[in-house]
Amino acid sequence: MKNIKFINILIIIFFFTIFFIYFLYEDRFDYIIKKIYILALFCFLFLFFVYFILKNNSDKIKVGENLSRINELFIYSDKLLNEFYDFYDKSISFSTSFHNENKEEYKKNFDRLYNSSDLFDKLNELYNKVDDLIASVRNVELNFNDNLKKSDNNDADDINNNLDKIVLNFKFNSEITVELIKSIISNIVKSSNPLSEGIYKIKLTVNNFLDNISKWKDEFTNEKNEKNFNKIIVKYSEQSDEFKKIVFMINDKFSNLEKSLNVIVKMFVEINKNTLMIHEISEKIRLLSINSSIEASRAGEAGRGFKIVSEEIKKLSNETQHIVDSILPNINESKSMAARILANFEIECNEIIDKVNNQKDEFNLFYQRLSDYYNDLNSILASVSDVINQINENTNKIIPTFQMSNLTIQELENLDKIMIKFLESNKDHMELIIKSVNEEKKIEILENTLGFINKIITTKSEVELLNKIIEKFNLDKNRFVMKSDKDVELF
Amino acid sequence: MKKILLADDSVISRNLIKTLLIRNYEVIESENANEALSKSKINEIDLFLLDLNMPDMDGITLSKEIKKDPRYSKKPILILTSEVRDEKKQEGKDAGVTGWIVKDVDQEKLLDAINRII
View 1 (spheres, rainbow over the protein chains, first blue to last red):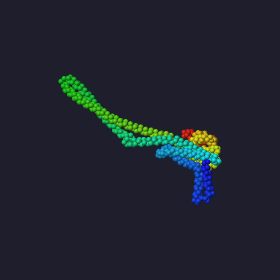
View 2 (view 1 turned 30 degrees about the vertical axis):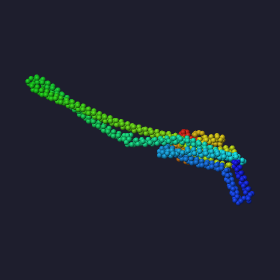
View 3 (view 1 turned 90 degrees about the vertical axis):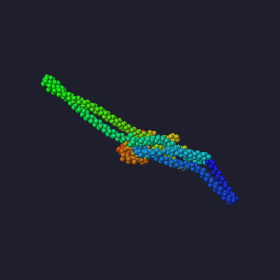
View 4 (view 1 turned 45 degrees about the vertical axis):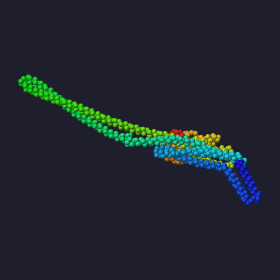
């Protein structure tokens, strides 16, 4: 500052020297030289004023630039807040549509949410911008301090104090803002990783499930597929008819056999009866024959007729015997026939049994198929249940991250209000450049700023941050409302 | 499902609490005290969750108005706040408030408290 003033004084001295020389010796100069001289004077004057104005305003311009940058930050944070609201709305829509079991809405909202991913980068950008701003404010402060030290102006101390006040205000507000932004970024990081992981897992589960459902659907509805239930049922129906036929067939055969056997039995009974009769008759005749012979012998010559009769009777007996003998083969024949019938029956029975056995195998196969089918269905149902459980579990995991996002949005909202106040208060403080600042005033400024912030903040992490700042600057805690450290308190 | 009336002028705060409760309870929202009173008349509310600082009426005054309705004279009322000043708490107790909830509350603690008193 001293150098600037020295140069300014030199320029003024030089100007007036030239001016006096011109007026003292005007009559000795040519017309052209006079004109050149006047032009030179005006040039110097012009340059002098330009130099003076630019030099004195350069730092003011820098402070003004910083204010406009703060304004830009405010606009940027406003935009960021709107993006976060949008992200938040998408998260809530996603969560609500899942709870309402509206599958179409759920899929639509899931896609929308999954594609929102650049918030963290934007917040980082905001943080870097504020960091740059603080660095430039510090540079301005250093510049002013250097210039003031070099100046021999009596008001240097006052100007320095006022400047300190402005810079302190910048510093405090910027540091608080940076801490808030850091906390917000930390929350975003904490919530975004489990959120994106959770969403990814849900997406994977849902995709796998949809693929499998598609596959199972094809298996069970494809006409050519053995697992087709309709095919199994139709086959069963066919088997059933076949089985009925076999049963009827067995029935018929047994009925026929029974009839045949009854016939044979009757035959045997008849034959037996006749045989017995004949036998009886034969015996009677034999007896009669014997008696007749005896009587014939007794009668002598007179008994000759008896002898003839007895011989005739004997012949009858023999004939009868002959008949009996001829019957025997029939009996034998009948026996053979019965044996044949029985043998055939056994064969046919075996055939039937074989057929039934074959059918039994078919039926076994059928029941096996049906059992397989139901087992598959059970696995499908178990898989569906498993998928639903996984989705449920992952949704439960991401609900706390929604809460974290809610808190972050709340903090962003609060930060927005703080930055508005920051901008306004710095504009006000620029007007105080002519007033002096003491230590008490510095504390008052800080307490006012923190007091305002205290009224706006609502979350626990913001409260903790505020307490840290209060401790850092050794401020009176009683001026600030202490916040609760318990989540829930019942009376 | 039991009904909870949630009164808060901040959309964010309402959504924050609603997300925690939506699976277990039916949440009826209102953005100011007068709307909360209207909704309490047409619904059968089982529990009230009221923000302390609302533009038209604070939570404690609202709880007094709610208690005037004979249906709700014994229903539980919880205040949403981060304040812990004793005089404010006493004011709440005198008004018949059942408890205080901090807004960034843990889901399990909130559900546990509501399950105990609803």
